[in-house]
Image (cartoon, rainbow, N blue to C red; front, side, top):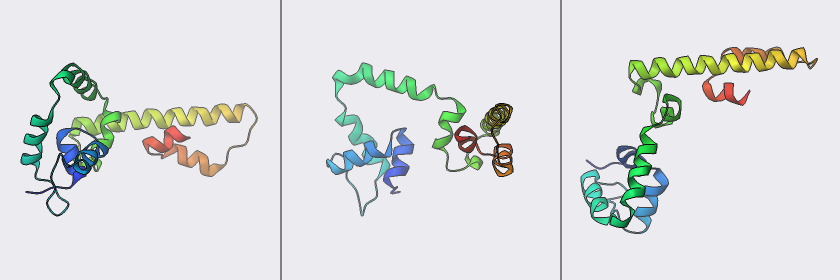
Length: 133
């Protein structure tokens, strides 16, 4: 089964840019623009520089230590998360929305005017919107 570069990057836990770089360098072959995951994984194993093993282990450890929020970008939608991950994501989103609400309250106490639209946005914001507010 052939997959896109982005899908292959997700499969191996690497960035799309990294996979794209290897494709452009000719390390990973493509078939009509798609990648054979089994073949590409084998080639990557053979392509590894043994002198970089310590760095690889450090990077792998760093990747595994992501919080649910940092990992949220790895999912195409909330439906792809496990129930536990979804619950953790929603709890963190609510905390961020509460922080945004407190900031708006502080701004109002300082004497500045905040539109009703911004207040409503803070109350129902997504994680990224709450952080932006």
